[in-house]
Image 1 (tube, helix red, strand yellow):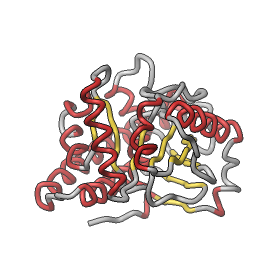
Image 2 (tube, rainbow, N blue to C red):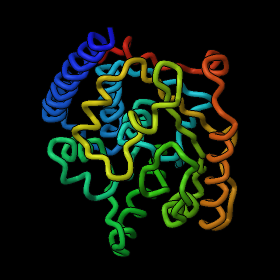
Image 3 (tube, one colour):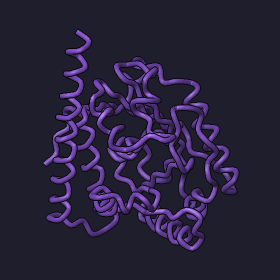
Image 4 (cartoon, rainbow, N blue to C red):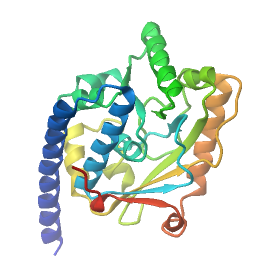
Length: 271
């Protein structure tokens, strides 16, 4: 029986992987045809792309709390899958490390979706990033930032980098902490190895293993109120504490989620 289950899991993983790359290719074709020009158009196009990816993976996304329409959303970072989850929830402008821009196909698609790329240790580039984010906030577009700067294995979030909070504070935009967690078949024991992407993991083997999983559920909890701070160091510390508190409080699946907004990926159909 275990051998049959393992074989079925492998077949499911490869089938989803093929579908995943077909979705990326089809999304690329749509990008060439639609050619979104404004940042708002690119953000909405990115949301549609993320919904397609979530659907092809058979992933459910549950949202606890009110989803703010504007402002900066700061979230803990567990995996490359996080960008898909938050991208499906918000038509937002994302900040990503500059290396992502060089990834085959993915870099082109994320650039088409309005992603802002950050070069670490480059002060001049950081100024340009802050200017781009400030422009997005002035257009009333939400922006999503992972202020840890790297991924972790579902542990407590690392300290948040204060510099990323500058655009929101300077423009007077709200800063909304959000906590993200995953389950597999309603349990969290295997998440650190099967969903989280961190440490010395390599991308393709991890992606294949991720596609083999059944019943992946992402639960995003948004804070009840934004962070109110006068300085970026204070904002970073307060946002970190809020995210950590939400993670420690837990998500009480499925009872608390039942009363909130749920994105059922399997039922998502987009042209």
